[in-house]
Length: 484
Image 1 (cartoon, rainbow, N blue to C red):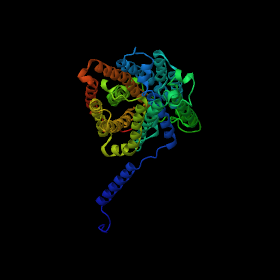
Image 2 (spheres, helix red, strand yellow):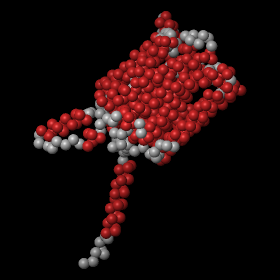
Image 3 (cartoon, one colour):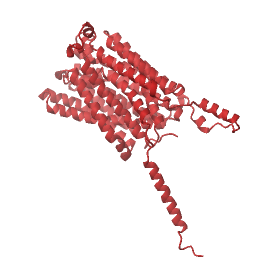
Image 4 (tube, rainbow, N blue to C red):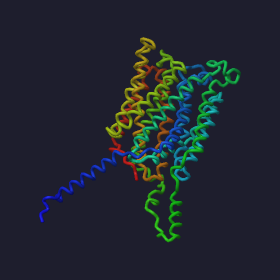
């Protein structure tokens, strides 16, 4: 009997392939819903560090001057301000890998709680410090006890999969930006409360400790987050490999075959030396590069804003500095929410990363240009236009972190080594961030003192480093693919 009336074998094959392709496309488009409550708590915890660390930026240079650390020489303020800012990252670099590896063994939640408690304690100490040694010790306590950033990145990697990774990691820079908004606003608005709010904060205490209020507010927020994490955050890594094996052994006693699943073995932590391979080190090197450039920019901004115009800055007061740096956080959070994930979906993580990293070059170039305009015409609309351009470029620059975090997460040998991988990355970034503030602010002060390139040599050096960083980005893989 003829089969011409029915579909041919080739038609069946084509139809089957088409169906498979359609199903694959549907699976590709369908993203796993994010666990909103757990990620919301994680992002709340992420707010703590930028609020605590950046709340000091609007007034740190004024604090150094008031404590007479420089002996009255305003040109040396940058040296000491950079030292204080760097110490947090120096002590963090010494301990963060240990905290991250500890979280692989005992879970993320205990490490998060300890870090937030230490941060709240150190902020209170910072607000009560009246000597350079006191400021240094309080910042060292913050860094030594705070391994939270690496742990939170590991938790985000565990809470997401390949279908929603970009969406999840895009929220981390947004949360950081919100903290970067609130931090400078708190520091700029609440320093010297006796002067700004004499009826609410009278008395000798506020005169003797004029920077305690912003520190206390940051500490209170940290304590609030501590309680929320304690009662509501669930441990993502619910069972350790040993527990899984014991569960399998117990089931064997009930008549099941005693076999240890492969994922138990593959999901065990790997030795730290196993992370020193190109697939892991290349993303970490790129992370270190953008971390160095970012922290130098953030350290230079308040110093540049507060330095008198004739000495190479803009002469802003702490309130103006806090409001403007806070405005960056607002714009950054809004724009990243709208455009980061669509950009990654359309152009790919590597392309977006390289473009965003390139934005460092015009950002550093705008510093001297803005000062030259201010020297010629004063603080006018053109100065604010240039500052706005720098702000918008900073938004794109910040997107580079969301991209590189996806590469680092995908580079982890397995899920049980995610904490160690992120810890190694954060340790490297912390070392870079240790050098960055002290290096940039010292170069700023040295450039001004010796009139190197008209006082703008620091910006030429940093623009050159940005070009070097772009060369390392070429070695990244085409796209991050999360390990199973």
